[in-house]
Amino acid sequence: MNVPFVDLKAQYETIREEVNFAIEQVLIESAFIGGRFVREFEDAFAQYLNVAHCIGVGNGTDALFIALRCLGIGPGDEVVTAANSFVATSEAATMAGARVVFVDCEPETYNIAPVKLEEAITPKTKAVIPVHLYGRPADMPTVMDIARRHHLFVIEDAAQAHGAMIADKRVGTFGHAACFSFYPGKNLGACGDAGAVVTNDEKLAQKVRMTANHGRCSKYDHEFEGVNSRMDGLQAAILKVKLTHLEMWTQKRRTLALLYSQLLKDSGLILPMEPSDARHVYHLYVIRIRNRDEVKEKLHQQGISSGIHYPIALPNLAAYGYLGYKPDDFPFATKYSKEILSLPLYAEMSEQQVQYVCEELVKYASPVEERTK
Ligand SMILES: *Cc1c(COP(=O)(O)O)cnc(C)c1O
Image (cartoon, rainbow, N blue to C red; front, side, top):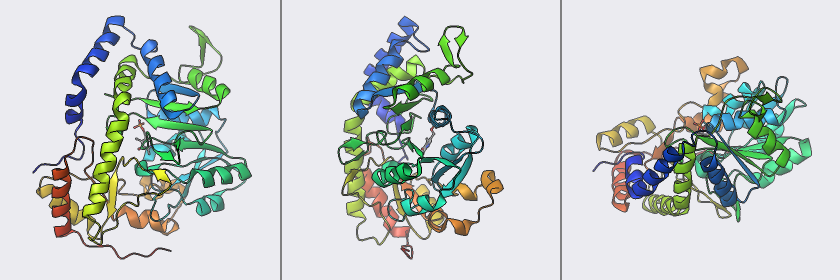
C-alpha cells in the first residue's frame, strides 16, 4: 500500500468544481491584486476566528515580519521564541532587525515552556512569539500573563493551527496579533504562497495593511516605506472555498489522529498528548522513537512517506551560530530533534492507510528512554 505524507491532489479532487469556478471568477473580473476576492476571504476568515481584523499578505513569514515591524520592534530589541519551530518564526524577528532569543520547549506539548520563557526575559525583550506547533495550542493564558507582567507584545505563530482552540476561543485571538500561513500543505492551504495577520487592534490592522502595500495611503502617496506583500485574488478566492471545508477536514484529521493514538497505545512509543482543555488540529501527528532514521527508511521502503519537523533545533542551525548557543542549552528541543517522526496525516487519508502505517511502524520502532525533567 502506498501512503503519501500529504495528498493535495486527493484534496483537489473533492473540491475541483468549486475551486475551478472560483478561479474563473477571478480571471473574468481580473481581480488579481486586492479587490473583492481578497476582501471576502479576509472577512470570512476573521469571522471564522472571531477576530476584528484580517489582513491578507504574501506568506506566513511576511505576516510575522510585518506584525513585528508594525508593533515597533526593531534593532536593539529582543524577541523570544521557541527553539523548536520552523525557521520562518525566528527569521521574521531578524528581518525586523531584532535579536532572536530561543527558549526550550516543554515535554509532552512541544510548545514553548512558560517558566523558561520568563527566565529569558531581559530589559531588551519586546515581544514573544509562541508557536502553536503541530496544531497544538501553546499555553496562551500563561504566556499572556507573563507578557502582561513584563509589558511584552505577543504575536502568535498560528501557521500550523488554523481552527485550534483553547476552551471555545480560537488560537490567533489571544495575542496582540497572530500570523497564519496558507502554504499549500498547511491545514488551510492556498495554491501557492499566502498568509495573513489577524488582530483586534484597529490601529495595528491599518498599519499592517499599509505596510504590506508599500506604506501606501492612496495610489501614489506613501506615508512611510513598507514592503510588497499582498495576498493575490486567485489565492483568496481558492482559500475562501477551502475555508468552507476546513471544519470537516479538521474533524477528519482529528479522527485519524485519535485512531493512530488508539492503535499505537500499547506500542511504548511516545505519542502526541491529546489536550483535555484545548482542541489540537493535528497539522502534524508527531511521535518519538529511538531509532528514528532507521524507521523512516524502513517505512519508505514499504511505501510510507514520513517527515521530520524539524531535524535540527533552531539554535543548533548554522544560521544561528552567531548567537553562541550550545545544544545543551536546549535539552528537550535538541533531544527531540533526533527522535521525532511525523506520520502521514491528511483529511482524505483512509483508516486502512492509518492501520497499515501502524502495523509497519511497530515492526521497526523501538521506544525512547524517557526522562521527564
Ligand atoms: C509554515 C510556517 C511558517 C511560514 O509560513 P510561509 O507561508 O511558508 O512563509 C511560519 N511558522 C511556522 C511554524 C510554519 O509552520
